[in-house]
Amino acid sequence: MIDVATALDSLHNGYSSTIVHCDLKPGNALLDEDMTGHVGDFDISKLLSGGDGMAQTKTLATIGYIAPEYGSEGKVSISCDVSSFGILMMGTFSRKSSTDDMFSEELKIVD
Picture 1 (spheres, rainbow, N blue to C red):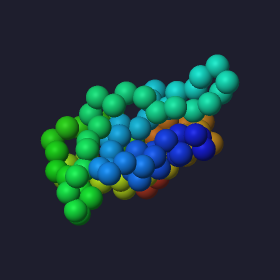
Picture 2: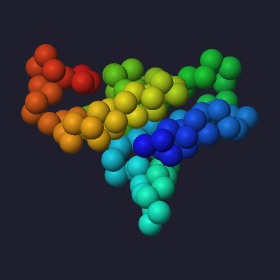
Picture 3: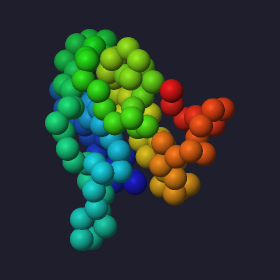
Picture 4: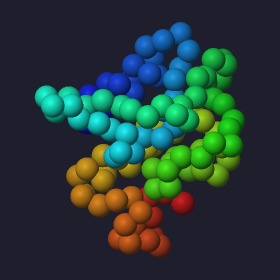
């Protein structure tokens, strides 16, 4: 998971324009033969070049891993990836999917 966090940091801070993955989920956090983590599938990623570090889009990501502001309003920022990473970490440690029945009603992680 540290490798995935490092990859996200590189996307967010390593280039002149910020890259937001927009669809971080278990299927896009990949391990190689040395168990090094990588981030894949950049189909819906966004390049943020504006000064406010945010963009508006109608592209949707995976239910259960999408940040609330992205899902409800289409607002894309690095916070979206941070939120998805947190949900990914929760799933890693709890061994539950973010759409598992245990997260219904009051225990919902995201709306």
